[in-house]
Length: 61
Image (cartoon, rainbow, N blue to C red; front, top):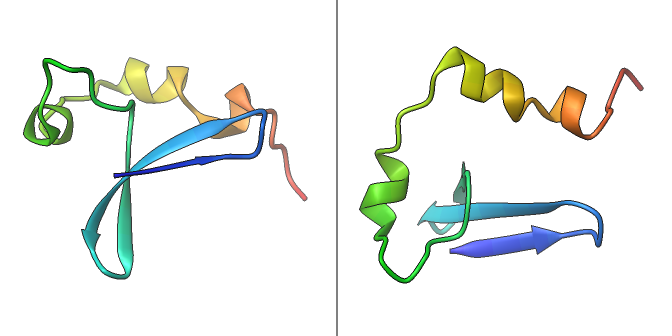
């Protein structure tokens, strides 16, 4: 598990192997396992809600 933050945004990751991190939606709670988080199903509406371009206002560079 890894957590990165720049002070404004926070991202959570699962380390799949030494050089690959997979982003996960949240950090685990005391009653969850990594398997629970990795098997969480997403809908199109979920993906729109967490769209980094909208939520962090990253429009073009």
